[in-house]
View 1 (tube, rainbow, N blue to C red):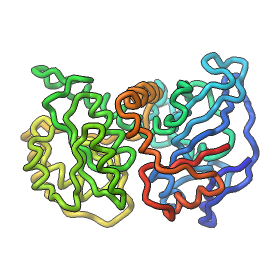
View 2: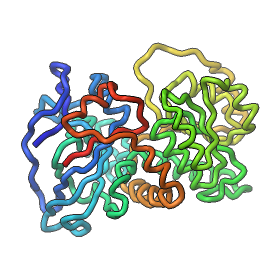
View 3: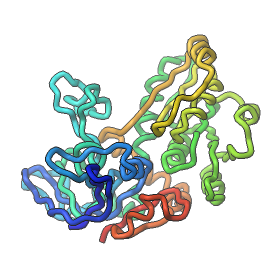
View 4: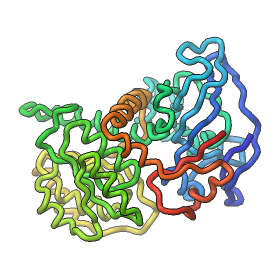
Length: 368
């Protein structure tokens, strides 16, 4: 079968032929992949910034944002049948007895660092024709979401982040602060990529008046898409951070989705009292930056601020993301569909992966 893979040993990537996987346990599901999204992680892997093949393999099949159709099930599989649509998750437990998170199915909080990740670290990914996975790592998707379900995995980032936000802000018992009850608490998103826009959608679903601060990156149509969901877009090329804060006032939640550490730490200085700053971006390996460390530290202490990072997600977040992507479709169908800029064949995957295609929000590899 065809697969898009990297070979770190000779720093090459492209479409290769690999053996088709078959069921090897009664609890496994075989999927024919339909759509696989391309994100910054995939581009960094094909640039050989990271990415580890499985043990004994000289190549790594990439791709972790996916949608597949069930084509075979093991005799012990209970939740899936042939013809169902499904999304496999990404991270697998480290298996170390001392790692409590992995032992209870929360490998997204693994503390040994010895987890594996499909398409990223020591496990083949989904940018191929067929995949086999254990039933417990797969989530059922309604057929009506077929065209946009590839957006579920990037939305899980916001789902996990928001769940943690609600838990953290229970420390403020004098206000109602939870899903759908965030009116009056401004949220600011940094970055207009898929993670940023999906994060803005989740914040809007949660009741936050939401602003998004970003460059348009050669896509002026992004502004209309973002504002069609009720989010105020502010162009970072024309509005300074000081002017931004003067215009929007206090910011209770900052959702970083741009991976630019300089911008993030400068914005952190403007977080309001009792506010929460959420990091989701992973900066490239650049040199050190300057920021007002004393100011940031003093404000965090004196204003009871919280900063946390979030990566990957558990199976519960996938179920939440499926529910919310359907809710987004009911409210903003054109905006949700507009997040997918172009679909490429697997043979042409090298174009978007190498950055040679036109500007895009989300490119997808469609596999037939």
